[in-house]
Length: 412
Ligand SMILES: [Ca+2]
Ligand SMILES: [Ca+2]
Ligand SMILES: [Ca+2]
Image (cartoon, rainbow, N blue to C red):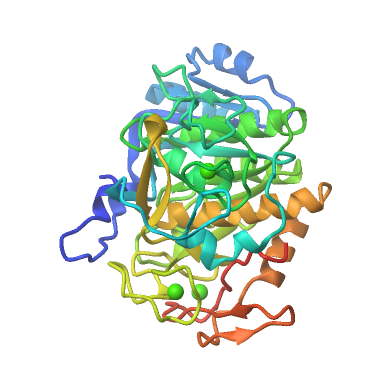
């Protein structure tokens, strides 16, 4: 089952899905001790490796017989053999093409409500091209005039192009980085360099083994291509030792990972990769008007300026961002309105990119601290004037006792 479809229930209720933990029968991920050659090890065990991991972790993935699993588990050079799983996008289209934007810039670009709510349009940076962002997703529309796509890679079986054939990845990319160019929308960090890492197919589904390949690629290319932030608006209900190790290594290599908290209305403690301690996990807020103060209309997923009814919550969540009826770029050069924690995460990704334009050598830990320090507290919801004379306001309805703040872009 696809979380994307589960999210759309007639009553607006969000159904949780244990099915998202779905194991793919007969397919496994093998992580090796450091220093072992993954291709050599696969060959030695008679495995045709469909994915080879050589940077973020050493390992491979593919179809294994029961005998091969046993032999690998007995091999001392093997750290773990774990099942491959299905992974899904965490956002769905509300109205294709419908425009939800609050204001228009002087250049004529729409400022979507999410960009407006976190005051990204008040940040002086109008060109964030010094920073590269990897979008680990369904790809990105390679020819979209509103997106600065540099180069990418596909790990989807049978698909060689990183072009977006779903719409989700392009939407995520546009929230983070759509250009100020007199066309369409503007993103949080306009014109940031985008690197599509396609790990999910045209239906928004993919495999854990492909996601690990994506993290491996980002780790391998980060320095060379200037990739400083990676967005993962995807997830599954389980935990993978191999994926966790790969993310740890990638963060240690200097890449800030921003991840959607998930749409199960559950504690994200068991939802990966949101539950990885080194990522910035993002919950979703419903905002209708791009303004603080909770004066907007109610949304399909809660009152204005309230915790989105579908959003996961819990101690692992670091920060919140707008994630309901967000207008952004889509596939085939188009635009769409989507909802999900998938849409919340790239607002934070854009903020990380803005911070990194000013602080190019900041570590992921420093980026995280800066975003959390400058964010708007949940309480009060009533508008208050900050030291710069700007109106600020939080949101209501958090589901736990750990009140993550709302990301803010103006002073990064
Ligand atoms: Ca634009
Ligand atoms: Ca509002
Ligand atoms: Ca919370």
